Image 1 (cartoon, helix red, strand yellow):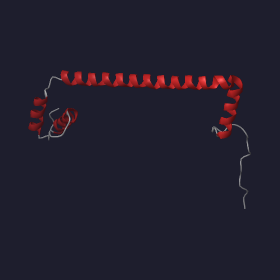
Image 2 (cartoon, rainbow, N blue to C red; image 1 turned 180 degrees about the vertical axis):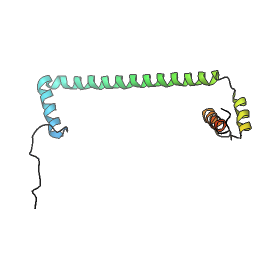
Image 3 (cartoon, rainbow, N blue to C red; image 1 turned 90 degrees about the vertical axis):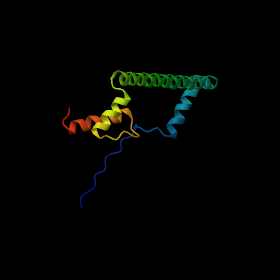
Image 4 (cartoon, helix red, strand yellow; image 1 turned 90 degrees about the horizontal axis):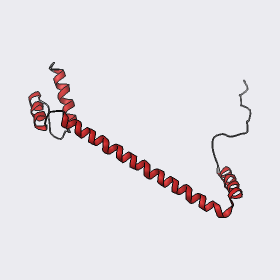
Length: 118
């Protein structure tokens, strides 16, 4: 029977923080800053996180609004009205009900390619 290899035990940081480590960190912070300063630090950290989340949300909303404006402008500048698009779909035999403009355009392009029109 062959011996089973077991790696030697290497004490040190394994990448996980358990309750003991958290307790040690809290005790060190208590010793460094004192019991009066610790709640102020926690409040400041909470405020910083709140401001960060709020600003992140604002940036995301601005990006979303800008993207929607660009998409709206692109659909206007395509030069084809919804009525013309529906007429073209009817000529090519593409169903138009319950489809967005983008879905309709994609299906019209696919159908036109299959028929060798483009």
